Each structure stands twice: as C-alpha cells, then as structure tokens.
Image 1 (cartoon, rainbow, N blue to C red):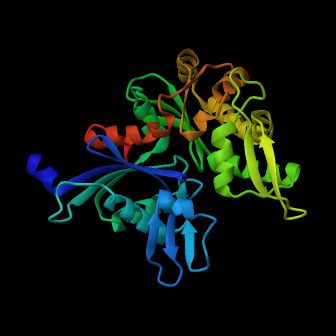
Image 2 (image 1 turned 45 degrees about the vertical axis):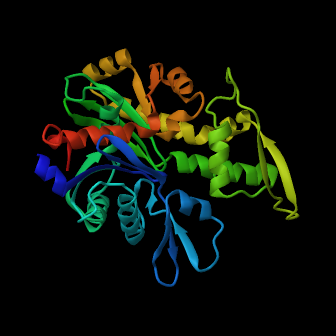
Length: 340
C-alpha cells in the first residue's frame, strides 16, 4: 500500500450547494464556499471559495461569480469542474514532483436522477479523478454521525444542506425509503430576503441574508437563550435612501415557518413509508439531524414536538456528511456495496 499511496491521492469530497469540504489523510484540508469567480471574456478562473464569495454581488461586467451547484446538483458543468480542480490544488501535499492519480469518493443527493449522477461523475473525472465512487448523502451522514449502518436496526437521518433536505431511513447497509426535499438553507435565505422586502421595504443580497440566518435564524418564536437583534442596513425600496432595521429571531421564525413545515411534511411522508419494525426502532432511538440547517435554533425541539419522536442534532452537523465520506473512502472495500 505504501508505494501505491505514493502514486495515488485519496480524497473524500462533500460537494455541497453552499460549501465544499475535502478530506485528505483523515483531515479536513479544504472547507470553502461552493462558488467561483470567472473572467467573462476568457472564462479563466479568477478566484475560488471564500475569495469568490467576498466578490459575490460586488462584481463589474468583466467578472462573473457562479455557484456551480443548485438544489444539490450541478447546474454549471464547466464552473463545477474548475471549482473541483481549483480546490484540489489547494491541498498541500508533500509530493510536488508529479501529479498523483486521484481516487475520490463524492457524495450526491439521494434523489439524484441518472443524468445528475453522471454530471457529478464526469466533473470529478475531468478534474483528474481516476477512480470515482459516489455515495448518497444520507448514508454518508449516518456513517459520519457514528451510526452502524449495517446492523438490522432502523436509523433515520435528516440532512438539511444548502440546496436539498435529504430524509432517509437506513437499515442493513441500504436506504429503505427516502425523500429529497428541495427546501433547505438556500430556501431559508430567499425567505429572509423576500420577508425584508415585503415587510420592511429593504433590499438585501444573498450574503446579508445568509448572515441574518446565522446570527438570528430560529425555528421557534420563543427561545430560552435568544440571540440579540441583528441590524440590517440597506436601501429603502421606495426612496433608495439608506435605512437601518433591527431584526429579531421571532421575525425570522415567522418568515421561515412555511419552509420548515415543508420539511416536516417530507419527514412525515418518509415515516409513512417506513416498515413497522423499523418504525419501532426509530421511535426508540430518535431521528438524527445533520447539515448546516440543523444549526437553526430550536429546530430539534420544534420537530420533536410536531412529530412526537426525539430529534438529536449531530455533533458538528456541518461536517457530518464529509466525515462519513472520509470513513467510506478509508473502507472502500467494506462499503463498496453502498457506492455507485
């Protein structure tokens, strides 16, 4: 294995709508926003990840910022390939004499069509991947949380990412029933933008919407430890004059209510399809929340009260899928049956 590992670089990639995480040698080596900045005339890559995110919404006509993934799937093939290639180059490797061949495990939404799966595989191969394995996100999340996916017990995982919420019941190393709901972090940000536009006549961009969600995002209108109000600055839509408005977590809970209800409906529809023996296991052990959306304040309590099953937020939910992908990469032979 020693010589083989010298010629091969093994990477686990969580290719997310909002963030891309790469694990190499059991360490997170890249954790960057999934965004690229390209030169309009030449198509050359100008910036990637955090630097490109800082440019988003502030560019002139010669620079275009692109988010290559939408709703968990590749929307811009060329930009996705450039992003993967650029992020792989960020990895500091000891061997700089030649480019090693890449062995990758990439995770994909459980509701992906054959065309969408093919797009991810092609992008990874064009970016230099020799052996490309694909694993479904809820399965990767379950492995990352520390669940034994191979035992004859039912486990339920809800992975709320940037583009999709993946809901799946897992047993005996396979997905028994699942649903991919295209309501997640991006939808929450859009809800916040439209709420501020209609209620306060203030226009904000994606980045400010994201900042509000992180600072005062809430799923419940009454929390035990509420966060302080967030001051939003922007132009008044009527007068174009600058205004400042404090936004409280109660307002955000109110404006996210509809989207969270759709996720609740998705969870209930998966529970309806669950075989009774597995349903009993899930009621006993509870349902696990992963992904950035799991960090929404009070979400676990809201879901527990609504569905009458305990919900547990995974430890470090943002990296649960990436951790699971990393474990699957280390044990490719053991988890071969989980991959495509």
